[in-house]
Length: 639
Image (cartoon, rainbow, N blue to C red; front, side, top):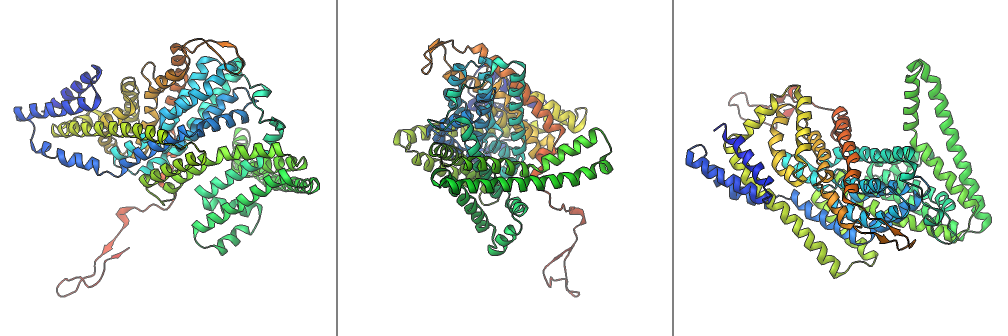
């Protein structure tokens, strides 16, 4: 019986390599080996009697309901034009920088990942919109295709990722905790992508040139420099608003840092947290509307006076930062000695005072813009930029903010996100029956695909567990040299190799249930383990030649020479080899991210929070009893 499990697993691999559908391969191998085991007397039929309960359990699993909600939300957003407007705006914002469009693609890829969670929607949208722009202005084809494909796969790790939902379900952990654990790795991975673009633009400047002036203009009378200066203040307000939404206490602390006493006044006036957040957001919205109104309609003298006030406030912020820096600099020698320790403390100080620098940039930009006001074209451009950036940010809070704040479950957050996507499409006048039908059809296809694979995986796992396959896997993996570290390295190498042949759904349903037992036996936190696997599974989208992201990009990239619709020039196509070679550096970056997550588990383990930990062994339970007959005379007391 001990040999049945490896034979069964090998048979499954053979069927998959032969190209049979995954769901039917899983079910056939499970039922076939179950019948063989019953015939040989090595398998109890009672295991298969549990199959109906397992299938109905899948149908009753409320966590899996989040998958169609998030899929539908992503498809509606992709067709509503939000991605197109975001990429256009971000491309202009980053335009004068070498590699600006590539930075914009990574930035928008992260935003789309946080609003859609669907890789196909992100890659196809950015391939259709950004690839022609990159080719038009002379980007290296390998770099352009690699950036687009890799940025689309951020939807795999940045919540609300579909794979995180499935991994949480398979590992028996909270989806909310999985989302919290994946936030920082997602941000770090986005930063690594941008760092790669930066290095490439330094080493090969011609690989990613800056956009010409006419391509980054925001319209007649709204040139790049005055618009960027004017939009600095609203961007700081948006950042402040997101802090208020995700970390209300930090938002109040920022109020107190710049306007002492206002935060306490708000807390005293409004007791509950929800209305307090709305009051602070309303305050920021009023400031923004007044600022735009002054940019557009205020008399010149009044706008100049307000601009001078902004610059005085900027000087005040600079003075506060200088005083804090002076105090910190005096403390550095005694605390850290000399050399690199002082530099490290200085960098840490600068990173800890990012609020000052953000406020300084916003006030300087707003002050300079108001000194030049009024300017209707500039104010119109600022309004458009904010209007393009705010909807996805609002949707991010609607989905992730409500989950992180404990207001909604992931399924409820997905439902609200789907409704929010419909409202955004309606606001853009893009909502119609054809779009709804296409989105619903694709959502149904993907949801049915997931459920059928899950049913097949349940059939396979019943037989596999019945022949003690879980014990075989646990014995195999727990005995690896190196303990936890050896286990993590081996498992990640295994998943990386399997990702050449299997997509992330197949890996999540086939491999992950076999690995969770050994991981728990070795004391590996399953949220940490799940996020590690999610990062690694990203490579399944990027592996040449089977990566799905590469197929999605291939479907929209030009195969033949074509005439550019803007310049009229005849441009060369993008070859399949260029797409594959462009993906290779990003696969290595994803592996570096896996190594960083293993080396620095705190970037994931922060999901536990910083509250006091209680040792269960120190808890004493005293049950009061009657001295005569031992009956309970009161409730138990916990100490």
